[in-house]
Amino acid sequence: MTPTTDAIDYAKLPKHIAIIMDGNGRWAKERNKDRVYGHHEGVLSVREIVNVSAQIGIQYLTLYAFSTENWNRPKEEVAALMELLVNTIRKEVSDLNKNNVRLCVIGDLESLPLKCQVEMQEAIDLTATNTGLTLILALSYSAKWELVEAIKNIATAVKNNQLSVTEINEELISAHLSTASFPDPELMIRTSGEHRISNFLLYQLAYAELYFTSTHWPDFRKEQYIQAICDYQNRERRFGKTSEQIQTNLTNVDESN
Ligand code: FPP
Image 1 (cartoon, helix red, strand yellow):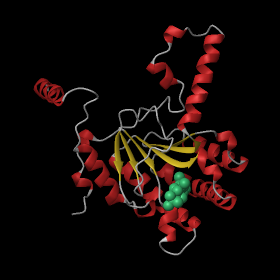
Image 2 (cartoon, rainbow, N blue to C red):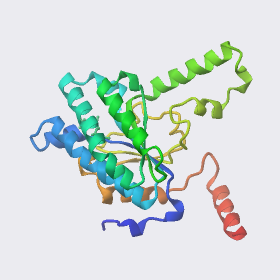
Image 3 (cartoon, protein in one colour):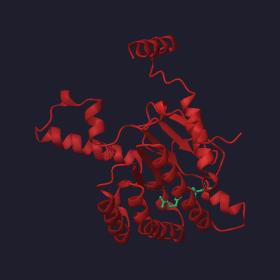
Image 4 (cartoon, helix red, strand yellow):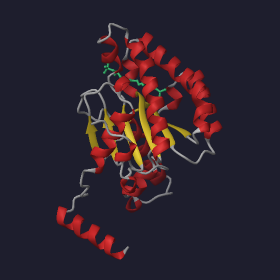
């Protein structure tokens, strides 16, 4: 049976969902189309997933739109993807505002074509005061790049006597990542059947629930998204504790309410 939003337990909604949108190329190939056609269809899924997220009250949604490794793709595909990003963002800004969505970007933005940087910055500025869903696009992003940058910044602060080595802890590292102002994702979804994290939010996904589906990204729509959220809600998150400890805590919370 296809789940609807009624199947969602709103008391157990993840605050932050991260998605590796995979399979645009294979989806297109299965239809004898070129890869770029798959990316264009992928944009329709992006729109639907953003809208559903805003509607059901997800606070943060991170989409892996272009990885550092994606620069190694054929240059025509890279150019088409950049063009698609610029055009999509330009077209979507008014809908983002209508849906109270704030746009943020993480990644090595300086490596993007200038046109793309300018367009992104404009959209970020135009949506900056929205208070609903925060949509985070990972662009020219890789977790290893992000960790190297964070370590360089921490090392510089130590060298300049602004920080002592004993002050380095998990929180300080989090505060030096590009996601410093967002909570860690509780749920990471990857479409298209690959069971990898592919250099995505390695530090932040330490305790995330991972959900893999064979559905290609252009076919990943509202129903598939709700299915992933319901699957997450049926899991027990133990954070290294035992199942008994978790159950006891839940009972105590229930009794104190
Ligand atoms: C992975 O499919 C998808 C990408 C590398 C790009 C994702 C981009 C979009 C969905 C469109 C633009 C996005 C936004 C946010 C406006 P793939 O090409 O790796 O597919 P394959 O594994 O089947 O080859």
